[in-house]
Image 1 (spheres, one colour):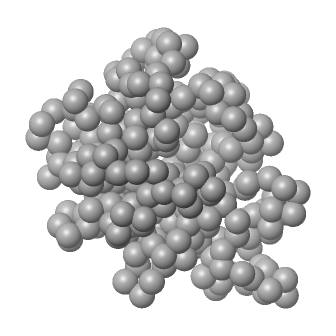
Image 2: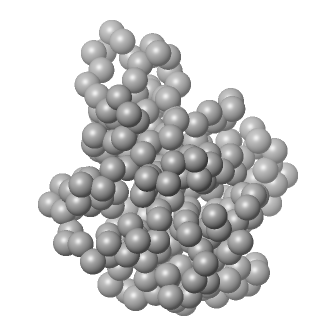
Length: 266
């Protein structure tokens, strides 16, 4: 099985324009743009033969080439990162079996998260799409509910069936948690990590499928797979002591920089 990592990145984010070029300071005080930090995270994944940035913006492409990344220019009309990964397929070698979508705003994704997806798909060839999730710690639980109360999207949560396949994803906190239970570390409250692994045929089918109404309302691309009746396997992963947080809002930058320092990432 051969795998490629594609990092979709666009400039015109409605919540945070120019986000891929936002500087993030590492453990030793060096600031690097978000897209570079995500690319460097991807470089740490074993058994990946190809790594490239997929974008439609010349500013992002120039920045990526400047730090040594390969770039695939993709159409402006891509509605989300999964469509952008599909648009990058012609530029990938024909022998690539699995395409890993490492979201451009997820620089804290540990390499073993991606390896876990690849291992799961290697072990079970019936899995067409896989994505990781972590059980929310009490601190993350409180942060999610604080963001929700303030009208901010702090992250994506999910619910699964007994097999581990996703039932639903939402930017609202799911499942419902009574206030008295918030802080309980055993709660089935999982924070979705913005990474996907696809079989090539699943990615091609996604690009050909119509947009799902719930996908639009939630702003979550993976819901289209559920609408297509394509199971999405959720792989629970261990963050090994450090929080995982995406750069969704400018207010998230200090949280990410703290995590970079925690891990000693320069």
